[in-house]
Amino acid sequence: MPESAQPLVSVIISSYNHAPYIEACIESVLAQTYPNIELIVVDDGSRDDSVERISALQARYAFDFVAQANQGLARTLNDCIARSRGSLIAPLGSDDIMLPERIARQVEHMHGKPEVGICGSNIQLIDAQGQVLDQRFRAHAFRRLDFDGVFLGDETGAPAPTLLFRREALERVGGFDPEIRLEDLLVELKITQAGYFIDILPDVLAKYRVHHTNTYKNRRFMVDTVLATYAKFQDHPAYERVCARFRNSMLLKCARDDKALARQLLAELPLRHWNGKTLRGLARLCFGKSRQQVA
Image (cartoon, rainbow, N blue to C red; front, side, top):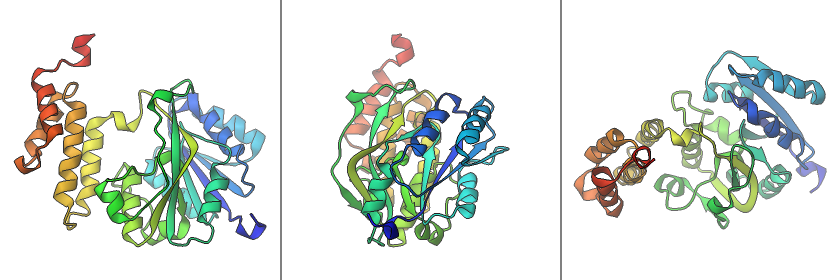
């Protein structure tokens, strides 16, 4: 790729209580083959020894590092974007890892494609110790998503550890919304609604770490936040169907282990949107034992 096609990429890591993982995360950015990267790390009020670990790395590699009182992820990302210089922005979870070719491969793809507001890729799952969870890996072909592609959820979306944003797309929609704590879904919907596409490459370019504090494991949070996100697009003709599809999916997931939430989801589901997942969730709710009971 010619030097003129190597725009500055701002990688932003917001660190929060991920001391066991933060060093590997930062080192994966420093190991990128792409030569034009600005690394910004902010510790957002961690109560573990993250700051000490980051400071030691910062002393060796001289990246931009600030430790602050807790502001929340969306506000921290917006602040970092405002003071970053890159035309491309890559937020990275402080427990995740970039593979060495990630940024180079995505920049190459986005070059000459101004319609692409976000580029993603496939991921590999690892456990808390960094061991690959091969049994949970699924490869997906290249896909281009517009607003309906994201909102309707008919195709697999872009994994969070792989998102590379075009700055102009982020600025056009006002950045991340501090009122919605699951920031990726909303900003993807807003950017595609603004007319951009999300291109998701078939390459595996990042590792997503599965551990006990992953956001998706807090099911009440997921339900409340995703439904609040969808509510911002309730004028869409498929709004009711999209919400019902999500409720059915979450009902099936939590019917054994969070029966109160499962009952709430079932009560919110109009009968016309009942399907096989509803019935399986109902069976688990009524007859299934929780994992705690089985243990």
